Image 1 (cartoon, protein in one colour):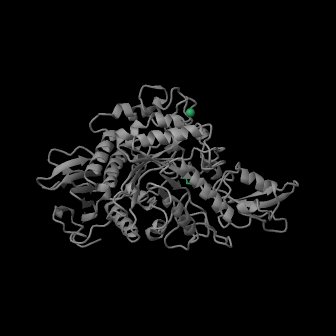
Image 2 (spheres, rainbow, N blue to C red):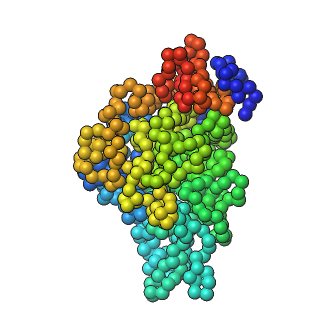
Image 3 (cartoon, protein in one colour):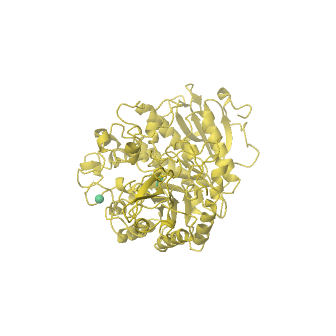
Length: 575
Ligand code: NOJ
Ligand code: CA
């Protein structure tokens, strides 16, 4: 912590802290026209966004019909989680055909229409790419099962003989991210128990063998397929997992769901191997051969930040999700440290930083932040689990969002967070769909609670999610109050908080700005970005806004004395 920055009472607009006469952290990288360096990108989880045909599952026509929502909200792009043909063993992250649309979600023509209609509104469209594994229903896996050990069909995946005299022990001790072993034994075409295949996730998600040139060629072709249809980029699933250490050495550690490797431990043999970068260099060359600025976004749970920054070197991907930020504690020192570290790490490779608080794999931040500070991030919350303080969670979530949207770089929003939506924390266990619940022996609730269809109209069936009451996961009765139509044009609502923040972010060029720290103590962080000063108070003692300052935006109403209360972020222009 820099000297002089612990003293909250001494907070004023004198730039007494870091970087005051130095260069700001994080100048925008890339050409001035590079939209993605400062973009706000909204994640659509298709099965839960909007259901056009009333079967209870969101679909592409539903999204297209709601595209004006993104214009009204003020985001730059949408990213869609997978909508490809899939048995849905992992909600579509088990892809059976990379070049089509699952009938659940529509048809290929619906994807084309969505892209065209989005572009007509100046919205970019990013699709999900799942290269680490296919579905077990993919034609390649069917061919591998029908073929013999050592065949070219099996060489597209990671098949090995088992250990022990009968080969009935898995080839190594790796466990699946969803629980249980990472290997499943197959029955050979002759009916005998045979080899084992690797699946770092569900058995329905066999890992591909990225040392095989055929796999590399196939995915370059899949990229071309979607680039030719006009998509603006790809969010790359499990980007740190494609290459495994050649000897598949034992690891002994249990897998934690989507945890990064610990900084002080050796790198696991299945994650963040150096060989993955060659794959992304090939992809970058392909994207650069297309017009426009098409982007690659890494989903890579990799720590420390310097290791993650390797994915966004100039000839690799454009962005990587900043999960260290998502997982940082809600304290001033933790927030200061993660913001500083993130900016330093990406500045070192000339890439913009990204920021994210929620997605379809984690407890929504309006609930997560209502847990006592220091609580380990839960993998889902259910009946009988410690329940967060809802009001506190929302208050902190609003403050966290306002802090995030003032940071230079690109920010990701997850559908429903603009409504202040909490996690569904009383979902009956019988309706859970996340494979984590069963595979963990019913010890980890998993991710269903953040995937519940979102509310649009308070008084409509399924809160306007679709034309009927049907909803693939039940919506809690309390969600009417979060519906969009209860919040639109209502001063102080979370929806209007987001809209105003996004408008001001654009007007003040915050995404392409720089960051000058003004204060970073035990209870306050404050920085300047262009002509906007941002202050978040984590402590119980109110902090005065400097005399004469013009308050631009605040995450909660400021009292008459103009002070900033606990768990509040304010944006102001100094006098
Ligand atoms: C990360 C995705 O975000 C998650 O939802 C999925 O289960 C795993 N990758 C496996 O594809
Ligand atoms: Ca539907």
